[in-house]
Picture 1 (spheres, rainbow, N blue to C red):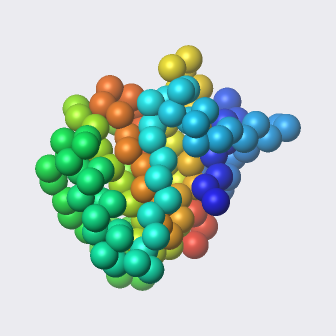
Picture 2: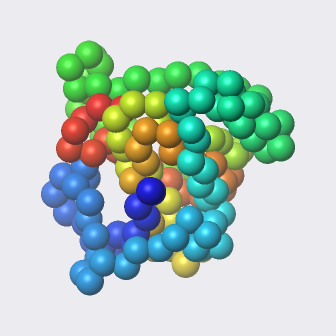
Amino acid sequence: MVQIWYMESYPCGDPRLPHHMFPPKKITPDELAKKTGTLYFKIDTMDQIGMSKRIALLKMERNLTKEDTYTLDAETTVDFEDKLEELFEESELDCEQARMILEGAAYYDIEDFTGRWVRILCEFGDLIILPAGRLHRFTTTPKVSV
């Protein structure tokens, strides 16, 4: 099951660590949608036909037209640390985008409507739809592969 929580206000150190508030403040996928506009789906990747249909339906419903596969791995990605640093910079999307994890795990951070950061631990089969106009950033977990 997906894990979602509010991040500590001033995280320091390795961004690939969880950076929970103290005490931790976890939220549900429904709360994530209400507080950030981010949608969460669990995709059954073992059922290839079902997965293809579900993704096609989401693409049609959300008017998503582009698709690509991106691999980020400490062993094979050229200038891995520089790429991680670049992806962790806050950015704002011009249009809604979907992200799905096919291997490994990653953190997506998104700013809620009050300016606080929410962290989403996305793992195998997790699909999120990030809304346009919200600040977000990305990093791997300490496993450094996604």
